[in-house]
Image (cartoon, rainbow, N blue to C red; front, side, top):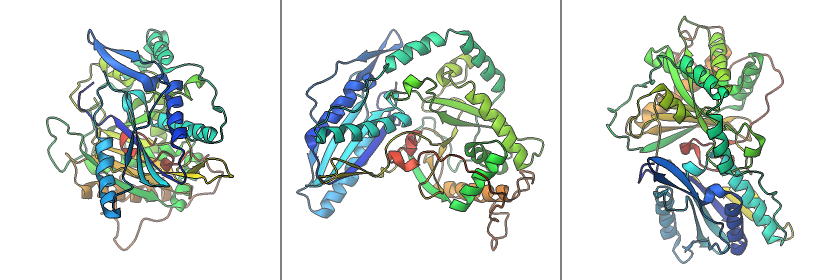
Amino acid sequence: MNPGDTSQNIPLFLQLDGELDQEALSWSVQEIMRRHESLRTTFQTIDGEAVQRIAPAVTDFALPCLDFSAMEAEQQQQAVRELLPREAGRAFNIAQDCLLRILLVRLQPQQHLFLVVMHHIITDGWSIGIFSAELQALYQARVQQQPSPLPELAIQYADFAAWQRQWLQSDAASEQLAYWKQRLQGAQSFEYPADHPRPEVNSHRGSNYTFTLSEQTTRTLKTFSQQESATIFMTLLTAFKCVLARKTGSEDIVVGTDIANRTRQETEALIGFFINLLALRTDLSGKPTFRQAVARVRENVLGAYSNQELPYDVLVDRLHLKRSYGRTPLINLLFVLQNVPGGSASASAGNEQEQSLSISPVANEVTSSKFDFAVFMAETAEGGMAGSITYSTDLFDAVSMQQLVTAFEHYLQAALAQPDLQIHEIPLPAEAKQSQPAPEPQVEASKQERRPASLRKLGNIKGNRTKL
């Protein structure tokens, strides 16, 4: 709990087009806060331990508003450009502040911005999806003068926290700890060559670069993965790790990934911080083929999934991993395939007989990075894949990250085309003939894997491990 640290802020910015019922929106937010105790929770430090304090539900919530509608167009655009990063980067006092911050901005009579910022201690990407879906359902019901369509929650986050504390004393927790001790014995943080020296204190300043994989590459990725009894995440992670190995000469690579960690059905509808961090360590020694490397990564990932309940912070303490301010012990790099619940990026709220309210995400420029860099990927509605790499500007220049992404895209295509080549024989862009692009992969067609939710369903949460 570091005062002034804004790297834990998770923003959700939405544009509302159409006739807005402000009372219905206020009531919807109030009802979500009533339903989820986590949104009314603060954290105080008592005798060195964090203690949760849950405030009573409010019955007279007033939606904070700013009115930009009188501004000239250019002035308004500038005001919005300044407002979004300021709201996303405003620090919370987790001992005193409500850790859910809401702001409505009126741009025109039928155009508004709805800005939501939460502290990561009470939410995660999955929770952002729940918030979005509940907001739309409740707003629509209120506009239509109907009662809430949402069932009461079976448990609250505090119940999960109590269960987790009890579970940590169990034999199952001891078995998972033994697994991770064996798996991570002797592991070192993976260091990707930086453009600038690592500062003593991480400023968390970051930037973002986006990219896409074609529909054809995505189809081939799915088919190959299915043939290898792997998920597309496993194949993508293998290609990513192979590129890291090629660029650094390292054969022992640790990359982190997020997992929803909602293993109980009762937790699936809760807003709260459930997400866990898994350290995925892969040995790429012995000149394996790409197909063999996928099998190694598959084994790593399945083992990690089977031992996912042990909180990473507990693992760090039990393994006595070195902590330093602003850095995650052992894990410098993150790779995530986002698959989270929630409404679509563009939706309508209100009675079909009335003018609908269109809801769409507003891009928020990423300005912070908790890791050296983090890759987030998800399938798109068009059948391809969208990706982004969020990186520390303390360490990397934009061109280095663009080159890394280009190498990843090229290597993935080449590996899928010739998966029985050894991983060091698959060419990187600088090694390939400039006049010849990577060959499009050819494999037998087979039934595709089920499509996960799109990255864009949650707006721009890529820089905060979500994604959502």
